[in-house]
Amino acid sequence: MAGHLARATRGDLLVASACAVLSLAMLVLIPLLEQADPAAVDGAPAPGGAAWWASVVVLLVQSSALVWRRTHPEAVAALSAAAVPVGAAVGMGPALGLTSVALLVAVYTLATLRAPTRHRPLLVLIGVLIASGHLAAALRTDLSAGQAVGTALLQVVSLIGAPLLVAALVVARREARTASADRLRALAREQEALIQAAVARERTAMARELHDIAAHHLTGIAVMSAAIAGQIDTDPAAAKASVGEVRRQSTAVLRDLRSLVGLLRDQDESAGTTTGVRVETLAGLPELVAGVTTSGQDVGLTVLGPADGRSPDAGIGPLAQLAAYRMVQEALANAARHAPGARCEVEVDDRDPAALEVTVRNGPAPHPPDPGGRGGLGLVGMRERAELTGSRLEAGMTPDGGWLVRLSIPRAEPVGTS
Image (cartoon, rainbow, N blue to C red; front, side):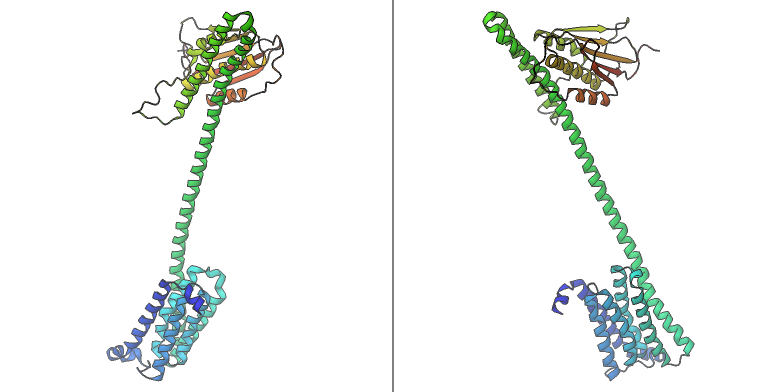
Protein backbone atom coordinates (compact mmCIF):
# COMPACT_ATOMS: atom_id res chain seq x y z
CA MET A 1 0.00 0.00 0.00
CA ALA A 2 2.79 2.42 0.89
CA GLY A 3 4.53 1.72 -2.43
CA HIS A 4 1.35 2.31 -4.45
CA LEU A 5 0.61 5.52 -2.55
CA ALA A 6 4.14 6.74 -3.23
CA ARG A 7 3.53 6.41 -6.96
CA ALA A 8 0.32 8.47 -6.80
CA THR A 9 0.85 12.04 -7.95
CA ARG A 10 -0.44 15.19 -6.33
CA GLY A 11 -2.89 15.52 -9.20
CA ASP A 12 -4.35 12.09 -8.45
CA LEU A 13 -4.82 13.04 -4.80
CA LEU A 14 -6.54 16.26 -5.80
CA VAL A 15 -8.88 14.48 -8.21
CA ALA A 16 -9.79 11.87 -5.61
CA SER A 17 -10.39 14.54 -2.95
CA ALA A 18 -12.49 16.66 -5.32
CA CYS A 19 -14.71 13.70 -6.25
CA ALA A 20 -15.17 12.78 -2.59
CA VAL A 21 -16.05 16.34 -1.58
CA LEU A 22 -18.45 16.79 -4.50
CA SER A 23 -20.29 13.52 -4.02
CA LEU A 24 -20.56 13.91 -0.23
CA ALA A 25 -21.68 17.54 -0.58
CA MET A 26 -24.48 16.46 -2.88
CA LEU A 27 -25.44 13.70 -0.43
CA VAL A 28 -25.67 16.29 2.35
CA LEU A 29 -27.80 18.59 0.16
CA ILE A 30 -30.40 15.90 -0.57
CA PRO A 31 -32.67 17.10 2.31
CA LEU A 32 -32.76 20.56 0.72
CA LEU A 33 -33.81 19.02 -2.59
CA GLU A 34 -36.48 17.05 -0.76
CA GLN A 35 -38.01 20.28 0.48
CA ALA A 36 -38.09 21.69 -3.06
CA ASP A 37 -39.29 18.50 -4.86
CA PRO A 38 -40.13 15.58 -2.55
CA ALA A 39 -40.90 13.24 -5.46
CA ALA A 40 -37.41 13.67 -6.97
CA VAL A 41 -35.62 12.25 -3.93
CA ASP A 42 -38.30 9.93 -2.63
CA GLY A 43 -36.59 6.97 -0.97
CA ALA A 44 -33.22 8.70 -0.40
CA PRO A 45 -31.44 7.76 2.84
CA ALA A 46 -32.21 10.04 5.76
CA PRO A 47 -29.20 11.89 7.22
CA GLY A 48 -27.70 10.10 10.20
CA GLY A 49 -29.40 6.78 9.43
CA ALA A 50 -27.65 3.49 8.74
CA ALA A 51 -28.30 3.73 4.97
CA TRP A 52 -26.94 7.28 4.94
CA TRP A 53 -23.68 6.30 6.66
CA ALA A 54 -23.35 3.27 4.41
CA SER A 55 -23.74 5.62 1.44
CA VAL A 56 -20.96 7.83 2.86
CA VAL A 57 -18.65 4.82 3.11
CA VAL A 58 -19.43 3.68 -0.46
CA LEU A 59 -18.75 7.16 -1.87
CA LEU A 60 -15.53 7.57 0.15
CA VAL A 61 -14.16 4.18 -0.89
CA GLN A 62 -15.10 4.79 -4.52
CA SER A 63 -13.45 8.24 -4.57
CA SER A 64 -10.37 7.07 -2.66
CA ALA A 65 -9.71 4.41 -5.29
CA LEU A 66 -9.07 7.21 -7.82
CA VAL A 67 -5.71 7.80 -6.15
CA TRP A 68 -4.43 4.77 -8.09
CA ARG A 69 -6.35 5.47 -11.30
CA ARG A 70 -3.13 5.91 -13.36
CA THR A 71 -1.18 3.02 -11.91
CA HIS A 72 -4.09 0.54 -11.92
CA PRO A 73 -6.74 1.97 -14.26
CA GLU A 74 -8.49 -1.37 -14.88
CA ALA A 75 -8.89 -2.22 -11.20
CA VAL A 76 -10.04 1.30 -10.28
CA ALA A 77 -12.65 1.33 -13.09
CA ALA A 78 -14.00 -2.07 -12.02
CA LEU A 79 -14.12 -1.01 -8.35
CA SER A 80 -15.90 2.25 -9.21
CA ALA A 81 -18.50 0.32 -11.21
CA ALA A 82 -18.93 -2.21 -8.39
CA ALA A 83 -19.88 0.67 -6.10
CA VAL A 84 -23.14 1.05 -8.07
CA PRO A 85 -24.76 -2.30 -7.15
CA VAL A 86 -23.29 -2.06 -3.64
CA GLY A 87 -24.87 1.38 -3.24
CA ALA A 88 -28.20 -0.02 -4.46
CA ALA A 89 -27.92 -2.87 -1.94
CA VAL A 90 -27.31 -0.54 1.03
CA GLY A 91 -30.36 1.55 0.12
CA MET A 92 -28.96 4.67 -1.56
CA GLY A 93 -32.07 4.88 -3.73
CA PRO A 94 -32.19 8.12 -5.75
CA ALA A 95 -28.79 9.04 -4.29
CA LEU A 96 -27.27 6.18 -6.33
CA GLY A 97 -26.56 8.71 -9.08
CA LEU A 98 -23.85 10.23 -6.87
CA THR A 99 -21.64 7.23 -7.70
CA SER A 100 -21.44 8.58 -11.26
CA VAL A 101 -18.96 11.30 -10.23
CA ALA A 102 -16.03 8.97 -9.50
CA LEU A 103 -17.18 6.43 -12.10
CA LEU A 104 -16.94 8.97 -14.95
CA VAL A 105 -13.39 9.88 -13.92
CA ALA A 106 -12.38 6.21 -13.67
CA VAL A 107 -13.74 5.24 -17.11
CA TYR A 108 -12.24 8.36 -18.73
CA THR A 109 -8.81 7.58 -17.24
CA LEU A 110 -9.04 3.96 -18.44
CA ALA A 111 -9.89 5.10 -21.98
CA THR A 112 -7.03 7.61 -22.15
CA LEU A 113 -4.40 5.20 -20.82
CA ARG A 114 -5.55 1.99 -22.50
CA ALA A 115 -7.06 1.30 -25.92
CA PRO A 116 -10.78 0.49 -25.43
CA THR A 117 -10.60 -2.28 -28.03
CA ARG A 118 -8.16 -4.17 -25.77
CA HIS A 119 -10.54 -4.02 -22.76
CA ARG A 120 -13.93 -4.86 -24.21
CA PRO A 121 -14.59 -7.60 -21.62
CA LEU A 122 -13.84 -5.12 -18.82
CA LEU A 123 -16.14 -2.50 -20.37
CA VAL A 124 -18.89 -5.13 -20.67
CA LEU A 125 -18.40 -6.00 -16.99
CA ILE A 126 -18.60 -2.32 -16.04
CA GLY A 127 -21.80 -1.98 -18.06
CA VAL A 128 -23.32 -5.04 -16.35
CA LEU A 129 -22.47 -3.67 -12.89
CA ILE A 130 -23.96 -0.25 -13.71
CA ALA A 131 -27.09 -1.77 -15.23
CA SER A 132 -27.66 -4.19 -12.35
CA GLY A 133 -27.27 -1.49 -9.71
CA HIS A 134 -29.59 1.03 -11.37
CA LEU A 135 -32.08 -1.68 -12.33
CA ALA A 136 -32.26 -2.87 -8.73
CA ALA A 137 -32.73 0.70 -7.50
CA ALA A 138 -35.40 1.43 -10.13
CA LEU A 139 -37.40 -1.70 -9.32
CA ARG A 140 -37.77 -0.49 -5.74
CA THR A 141 -39.64 2.58 -6.98
CA ASP A 142 -42.97 2.93 -8.72
CA LEU A 143 -41.40 2.49 -12.19
CA SER A 144 -42.54 -0.38 -14.33
CA ALA A 145 -40.15 -3.14 -15.39
CA GLY A 146 -39.81 -1.62 -18.87
CA GLN A 147 -39.09 1.82 -17.48
CA ALA A 148 -36.57 0.37 -15.03
CA VAL A 149 -34.70 -1.43 -17.84
CA GLY A 150 -34.73 1.72 -19.97
CA THR A 151 -33.36 3.78 -17.09
CA ALA A 152 -30.60 1.23 -16.44
CA LEU A 153 -29.58 1.14 -20.12
CA LEU A 154 -29.57 4.94 -20.29
CA GLN A 155 -27.20 5.03 -17.32
CA VAL A 156 -24.89 2.50 -19.02
CA VAL A 157 -24.74 4.51 -22.23
CA SER A 158 -24.14 7.83 -20.47
CA LEU A 159 -21.62 6.57 -17.92
CA ILE A 160 -19.56 4.59 -20.44
CA GLY A 161 -20.21 6.23 -23.82
CA ALA A 162 -19.69 9.85 -22.73
CA PRO A 163 -16.24 9.37 -21.14
CA LEU A 164 -15.17 7.12 -24.01
CA LEU A 165 -16.10 9.82 -26.54
CA VAL A 166 -14.30 12.58 -24.64
CA ALA A 167 -11.26 10.33 -24.15
CA ALA A 168 -11.17 9.53 -27.88
CA LEU A 169 -11.05 13.24 -28.71
CA VAL A 170 -8.31 13.86 -26.13
CA VAL A 171 -6.23 10.89 -27.34
CA ALA A 172 -6.61 11.98 -30.97
CA ARG A 173 -5.34 15.47 -30.17
CA ARG A 174 -2.49 14.04 -28.08
CA GLU A 175 -1.45 11.69 -30.90
CA ALA A 176 -1.63 14.56 -33.39
CA ARG A 177 0.70 16.63 -31.19
CA THR A 178 3.04 13.65 -30.82
CA ALA A 179 3.06 13.07 -34.57
CA SER A 180 3.77 16.74 -35.17
CA ALA A 181 6.62 16.69 -32.66
CA ASP A 182 8.03 13.52 -34.26
CA ARG A 183 7.83 15.13 -37.68
CA LEU A 184 9.67 18.21 -36.44
CA ARG A 185 12.36 16.03 -34.88
CA ALA A 186 12.67 14.07 -38.13
CA LEU A 187 13.00 17.31 -40.09
CA ALA A 188 15.63 18.50 -37.64
CA ARG A 189 17.56 15.25 -38.05
CA GLU A 190 17.24 15.50 -41.83
CA GLN A 191 18.48 19.08 -41.76
CA GLU A 192 21.39 18.05 -39.56
CA ALA A 193 22.23 15.24 -42.00
CA LEU A 194 22.12 17.69 -44.93
CA ILE A 195 24.40 20.07 -43.04
CA GLN A 196 26.83 17.26 -42.27
CA ALA A 197 26.80 16.18 -45.93
CA ALA A 198 27.47 19.76 -47.03
CA VAL A 199 30.32 20.01 -44.54
CA ALA A 200 31.76 16.75 -45.86
CA ARG A 201 31.54 18.04 -49.43
CA GLU A 202 33.28 21.25 -48.42
CA ARG A 203 36.02 19.30 -46.70
CA THR A 204 36.48 17.16 -49.80
CA ALA A 205 36.63 20.24 -52.01
CA MET A 206 39.17 21.80 -49.66
CA ALA A 207 41.25 18.62 -49.80
CA ARG A 208 41.16 18.71 -53.61
CA GLU A 209 42.30 22.33 -53.67
CA LEU A 210 45.11 21.65 -51.21
CA HIS A 211 46.19 18.64 -53.27
CA ASP A 212 46.25 20.61 -56.52
CA ILE A 213 48.14 23.55 -55.04
CA ALA A 214 50.69 21.46 -53.18
CA ALA A 215 51.19 18.89 -55.97
CA HIS A 216 51.85 21.55 -58.62
CA HIS A 217 54.34 23.66 -56.70
CA LEU A 218 56.06 20.84 -54.81
CA THR A 219 56.56 18.90 -58.04
CA GLY A 220 58.34 21.90 -59.50
CA ILE A 221 60.43 22.27 -56.36
CA ALA A 222 61.39 18.58 -56.51
CA VAL A 223 62.42 18.84 -60.19
CA MET A 224 64.54 21.94 -59.55
CA SER A 225 66.12 20.43 -56.44
CA ALA A 226 67.24 17.44 -58.52
CA ALA A 227 68.75 19.82 -61.09
CA ILE A 228 70.53 21.82 -58.39
CA ALA A 229 72.24 18.67 -57.13
CA GLY A 230 73.92 18.26 -60.52
CA GLN A 231 74.61 21.96 -61.15
CA ILE A 232 76.08 22.98 -57.82
CA ASP A 233 79.57 21.73 -58.77
CA THR A 234 79.53 22.09 -62.56
CA ASP A 235 77.50 25.27 -63.05
CA PRO A 236 77.25 27.34 -59.87
CA ALA A 237 75.51 30.22 -61.67
CA ALA A 238 72.73 27.97 -62.96
CA ALA A 239 72.45 26.35 -59.52
CA LYS A 240 72.07 29.80 -57.98
CA ALA A 241 69.31 30.65 -60.46
CA SER A 242 67.57 27.35 -59.67
CA VAL A 243 67.72 28.12 -55.95
CA GLY A 244 66.00 31.42 -56.69
CA GLU A 245 63.30 29.55 -58.62
CA VAL A 246 62.82 27.16 -55.67
CA ARG A 247 62.31 30.19 -53.47
CA ARG A 248 59.78 31.61 -55.95
CA GLN A 249 57.87 28.35 -56.05
CA SER A 250 57.87 28.12 -52.24
CA THR A 251 56.54 31.66 -52.01
CA ALA A 252 53.87 30.81 -54.59
CA VAL A 253 52.63 27.75 -52.70
CA LEU A 254 52.41 29.77 -49.49
CA ARG A 255 50.50 32.50 -51.31
CA ASP A 256 48.02 30.03 -52.83
CA LEU A 257 47.50 28.24 -49.52
CA ARG A 258 46.90 31.61 -47.84
CA SER A 259 44.35 32.47 -50.53
CA LEU A 260 42.56 29.15 -50.04
CA VAL A 261 42.39 29.62 -46.29
CA GLY A 262 41.10 33.16 -46.83
CA LEU A 263 38.25 31.82 -48.96
CA LEU A 264 37.31 29.34 -46.24
CA ARG A 265 37.22 31.92 -43.45
CA ASP A 266 34.13 33.78 -42.43
CA GLN A 267 34.23 37.22 -44.01
CA ASP A 268 35.07 39.99 -41.58
CA GLU A 269 34.34 43.26 -43.34
CA SER A 270 35.75 45.39 -40.57
CA ALA A 271 39.05 43.53 -40.57
CA GLY A 272 39.12 42.98 -44.32
CA THR A 273 40.09 39.29 -44.14
CA THR A 274 39.37 38.72 -47.85
CA THR A 275 41.92 41.26 -49.02
CA GLY A 276 44.52 39.73 -51.29
CA VAL A 277 42.53 36.55 -52.05
CA ARG A 278 43.04 35.57 -55.66
CA VAL A 279 40.71 33.24 -57.57
CA GLU A 280 42.49 31.69 -60.56
CA THR A 281 41.00 32.25 -64.04
CA LEU A 282 41.82 31.45 -67.65
CA ALA A 283 43.75 34.70 -67.83
CA GLY A 284 46.28 33.20 -65.42
CA LEU A 285 47.24 30.29 -67.71
CA PRO A 286 50.13 32.15 -69.44
CA GLU A 287 51.63 32.98 -66.03
CA LEU A 288 51.15 29.36 -64.93
CA VAL A 289 52.89 28.01 -68.04
CA ALA A 290 55.68 30.55 -67.70
CA GLY A 291 56.28 29.55 -64.10
CA VAL A 292 56.40 25.86 -64.99
CA THR A 293 58.78 26.55 -67.87
CA THR A 294 61.07 28.53 -65.59
CA SER A 295 61.24 25.55 -63.25
CA GLY A 296 62.71 23.43 -66.05
CA GLN A 297 59.65 21.74 -67.56
CA ASP A 298 59.26 21.94 -71.36
CA VAL A 299 55.77 23.41 -71.84
CA GLY A 300 54.17 25.30 -74.72
CA LEU A 301 50.93 27.29 -74.78
CA THR A 302 48.68 27.71 -77.82
CA VAL A 303 45.50 29.79 -77.88
CA LEU A 304 43.17 29.23 -80.82
CA GLY A 305 40.71 32.11 -80.88
CA PRO A 306 37.96 33.33 -83.22
CA ALA A 307 38.44 35.97 -85.88
CA ASP A 308 36.47 38.58 -83.90
CA GLY A 309 39.14 38.51 -81.18
CA ARG A 310 36.77 38.00 -78.25
CA SER A 311 38.14 36.95 -74.87
CA PRO A 312 38.43 33.19 -74.26
CA ASP A 313 36.49 33.56 -71.00
CA ALA A 314 33.36 34.93 -72.74
CA GLY A 315 30.38 33.00 -71.34
CA ILE A 316 32.57 31.00 -68.94
CA GLY A 317 31.74 31.50 -65.27
CA PRO A 318 34.37 31.95 -62.54
CA LEU A 319 33.84 28.43 -61.15
CA ALA A 320 34.34 26.88 -64.59
CA GLN A 321 37.45 29.02 -65.13
CA LEU A 322 38.86 27.83 -61.81
CA ALA A 323 38.14 24.23 -62.85
CA ALA A 324 40.03 24.77 -66.13
CA TYR A 325 42.97 26.40 -64.37
CA ARG A 326 43.20 23.58 -61.82
CA MET A 327 42.96 20.99 -64.58
CA VAL A 328 45.94 22.49 -66.41
CA GLN A 329 47.86 22.87 -63.16
CA GLU A 330 47.25 19.26 -62.10
CA ALA A 331 47.90 17.85 -65.59
CA LEU A 332 51.29 19.61 -65.79
CA ALA A 333 52.19 18.39 -62.29
CA ASN A 334 51.23 14.82 -63.28
CA ALA A 335 53.33 15.07 -66.44
CA ALA A 336 56.36 16.24 -64.46
CA ARG A 337 55.85 13.41 -62.00
CA HIS A 338 55.06 10.52 -64.33
CA ALA A 339 56.78 11.63 -67.55
CA PRO A 340 59.79 13.75 -66.50
CA GLY A 341 61.47 15.49 -69.40
CA ALA A 342 58.54 14.98 -71.80
CA ARG A 343 57.31 17.90 -73.90
CA CYS A 344 53.89 19.28 -72.79
CA GLU A 345 51.45 21.28 -74.89
CA VAL A 346 48.66 23.37 -73.41
CA GLU A 347 45.98 24.35 -75.91
CA VAL A 348 43.03 26.69 -75.35
CA ASP A 349 40.56 26.28 -78.25
CA ASP A 350 38.05 29.13 -78.40
CA ARG A 351 36.84 28.58 -81.96
CA ASP A 352 33.57 26.86 -81.02
CA PRO A 353 30.99 29.51 -79.96
CA ALA A 354 29.12 26.92 -77.85
CA ALA A 355 32.00 25.58 -75.76
CA LEU A 356 35.62 26.17 -74.78
CA GLU A 357 38.13 23.33 -74.91
CA VAL A 358 41.29 23.24 -72.81
CA THR A 359 43.74 20.43 -73.62
CA VAL A 360 46.98 19.35 -71.96
CA ARG A 361 49.01 16.79 -73.89
CA ASN A 362 52.42 15.38 -73.04
CA GLY A 363 54.61 13.03 -75.01
CA PRO A 364 56.08 9.74 -73.78
CA ALA A 365 58.62 9.90 -70.99
CA PRO A 366 62.20 9.98 -72.33
CA HIS A 367 63.30 8.05 -69.25
CA PRO A 368 61.41 6.09 -66.57
CA PRO A 369 59.82 8.13 -63.76
CA ASP A 370 60.83 7.90 -60.13
CA PRO A 371 59.72 4.42 -58.98
CA GLY A 372 58.80 5.84 -55.58
CA GLY A 373 56.01 7.97 -57.06
CA ARG A 374 52.42 7.06 -56.32
CA GLY A 375 49.13 7.80 -57.98
CA GLY A 376 47.13 10.59 -56.36
CA LEU A 377 43.64 12.02 -56.56
CA GLY A 378 44.31 14.45 -59.41
CA LEU A 379 41.98 12.86 -61.95
CA VAL A 380 39.29 12.40 -59.30
CA GLY A 381 39.41 16.10 -58.48
CA MET A 382 39.31 17.00 -62.20
CA ARG A 383 36.21 14.88 -62.75
CA GLU A 384 34.45 16.30 -59.71
CA ARG A 385 35.06 19.85 -60.88
CA ALA A 386 33.89 18.96 -64.37
CA GLU A 387 30.64 17.50 -63.03
CA LEU A 388 30.13 20.52 -60.79
CA THR A 389 30.40 22.94 -63.72
CA GLY A 390 28.54 20.77 -66.26
CA SER A 391 31.75 20.23 -68.26
CA ARG A 392 33.04 17.08 -69.95
CA LEU A 393 36.46 15.66 -69.07
CA GLU A 394 38.45 13.22 -71.21
CA ALA A 395 41.67 11.63 -70.01
CA GLY A 396 43.71 8.78 -71.40
CA MET A 397 46.85 7.57 -73.13
CA THR A 398 47.73 8.81 -76.62
CA PRO A 399 48.82 6.49 -79.46
CA ASP A 400 52.47 7.54 -79.05
CA GLY A 401 52.51 6.54 -75.36
CA GLY A 402 51.91 10.00 -73.95
CA TRP A 403 48.93 11.30 -72.03
CA LEU A 404 46.07 13.68 -72.88
CA VAL A 405 43.58 15.52 -70.71
CA ARG A 406 40.81 17.57 -72.36
CA LEU A 407 38.14 19.67 -70.61
CA SER A 408 35.18 20.88 -72.66
CA ILE A 409 33.32 23.73 -70.93
CA PRO A 410 29.89 24.79 -72.27
CA ARG A 411 29.29 28.51 -72.41
CA ALA A 412 26.47 29.94 -70.35
CA GLU A 413 25.28 31.85 -73.45
CA PRO A 414 26.76 30.80 -76.83
CA VAL A 415 28.31 33.85 -78.41
CA GLY A 416 28.49 34.83 -82.03
CA THR A 417 25.36 32.84 -83.04
CA SER A 418 22.77 35.63 -83.25
